[in-house]
Length: 157
Image (tube, rainbow, N blue to C red; front, side):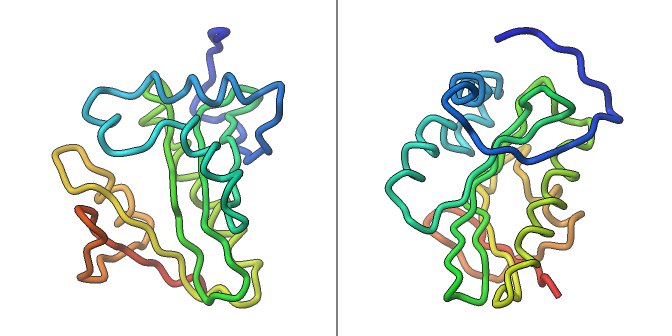
């Protein structure tokens, strides 16, 4: 992957993954630390899953013109909530605010759906987990577990 320097003031966008960009987006998973790799599925696996799930909505996260992350929703218009299925920011791009800004774009996407009242997600509870990140963005634990993962939610309205 071509090395690009992207600053903290980069414009964050969500873009469709294309035949031209899928390789770069898949390689982003390789940049995660070993503990983080245990918390999120590889992007290649997520993209493959998405092609077999009609309610999957997925995008690459870009900072300016550099791919820096991946997001995938389970987005069934018949339901009153959206599920944040996958979310990752590449290791070397963490701590710059890209994740927060990308998730704000995801929340805006979810708000535009007329039935969506909340967004739910889950995370693996372990040292360095995403819990504090999600809490800063208004997510709260539901008290439920999905397998080994803590279920969280955030109102959209």
